[in-house]
Image (cartoon, rainbow, N blue to C red; front, side, top):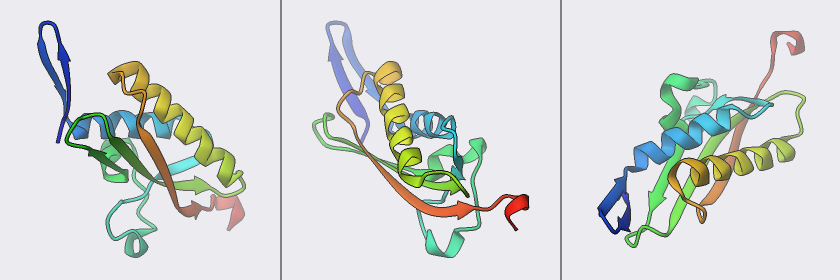
Length: 124
C-alpha cells in the first residue's frame, strides 16, 4: 500500500518501491557495508551480495493502512573487521535521515538484519 499524504491541492502517493530504493541508496552510503542481502531465502543465498542495481531486493517496506505506520527492514552484509553494531546503527540513522529529507517520513521504524560478513581478498 502506498504512503498517501493529503495536501490542500490533493493527494500525493509514494509507492513502497520508492521508499525501498531511497532506503537502499542511503544504506549503501554507510562505511563498512559490503552490500544488501536478498530479503527472501536469506540462508540459501548469503553469498549473493547485491549492488546498486538491485537496491529494493535487500529492503522490505510495509506501510500500514493509515499511511503513518511505516516499517523498513534492511537486510545487509557487512565488511569483515568493522564494528557490526556501529555499522547497523549508522545504517538506521542514515536511512531515517534520507526518508525524512526526501519523503517527509519522520516516524518510520527501521530494522536492520545483519545477514553475513564479507571477507576481502586480504582476509582469505
